[in-house]
Amino acid sequence: MQGRLITFEGIDGAGKTTQLQWVRSWLADAGWARSLVATREPGGTGIGRHLRSVLLQVNDEVLDDRAELLLYAADRAQHIAQVIEPALAEGQWVLCDRFTDSTFAYQGFGRGLEMGLVEQSVRMATQGLQPDLTLWFDVDPEMAAKRRQDRAGGGTDRLEAAGLAFQKRTRQGFQELATQFPGRIVQVDGNQELEAVFVIVKEILEPRLKQWLSEDLMEVS
Ligand code: T5A
Image 1 (tube, rainbow, N blue to C red):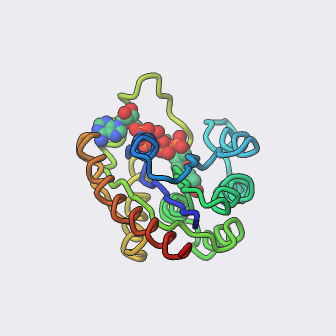
Image 2 (cartoon, rainbow, N blue to C red; image 1 turned 90 degrees about the vertical axis):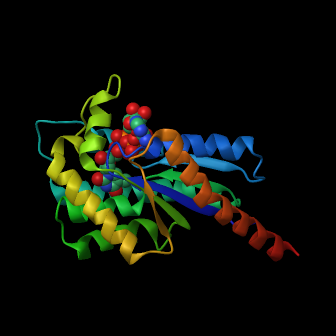
């Protein structure tokens, strides 16, 4: 059986985390005959949780954009080695809240770092590992900001504090990535109510998962 990596992407407050949790429960309850791992970046490992706090805490000291890029790469290299690759090797389905597209969208388009540098950092961290499927939750940046404000007990982290123009550039980045990789990245209209978004997500996932299961069966027989 072949492991599969499904990533959930979008700007801050796009609703990825909520949808990932719903997908996880749906897959577990519906008996899709495959064990699952749900994880996230940054912070999918113990070491990654230290890096996450450096990356997200608002601090008096300004984190240099290239240092930020390398910290995301370090988090990802550790995450792949410790969590993602072992799970894929066991034939599990890995649901990952953010992955490489976030680096291109945030550090490349949002921060404006040179794409060659971003690509290098991603290549070093992933050694070529790519998602099998990416759900891009596309939400109007103003609506996403409102959702974050309304969230109970929600503070503002360092990336959110970068402001609306930054989120707009990042959204544009996801748009360009979706155009560049139309087979892998599927756009989901995240502006609708949670339940309506989940219906779309299931419609996208069901045929893919069935296809993967039948590919596995063909490999076995
Ligand atoms: N980052 C990450 C980079 O810059 N480069 C990288 O390489 C990587 C990997 C991570 C930060 O790091 C950056 C991107 C991020 O800024 P995080 O805390 O993990 O930080 O941030 P997010 O992943 O953005 O998490 P959020 O929780 O802010 O956003 P989500 O996961 O998109 O949204 P979610 O599901 O938590 O929902 C937010 C709120 O909106 C409501 C939810 O109930 C919740 O209250 N909501 C909806 N309300 C109405 N209708 C809907 N359809 C809704 N969907 C969600």
